[in-house]
Length: 69
Image (cartoon, rainbow, N blue to C red; front, side, top):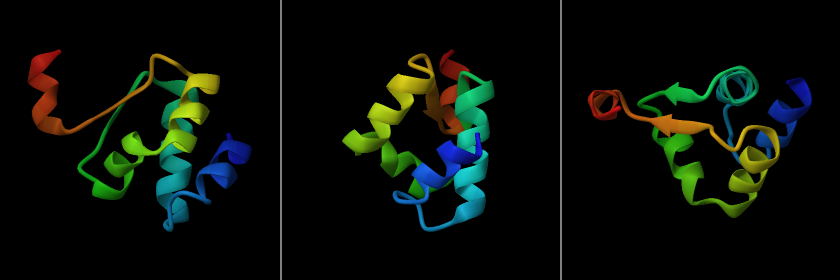
């Protein structure tokens, strides 16, 4: 988990966000967040590669999207 957080640090400036995202990526299938910096990662090919390697089912969602699932 910490190694993933350190890798995410290259993409996110806030290390606490990196730890939260890494934990979710390794232990959950969905991260519910309003953090724009994290949502922007969905258009980053490097981030998508990390997700595919660790947890291909992982999703990042806004709270408003929760009603849709």
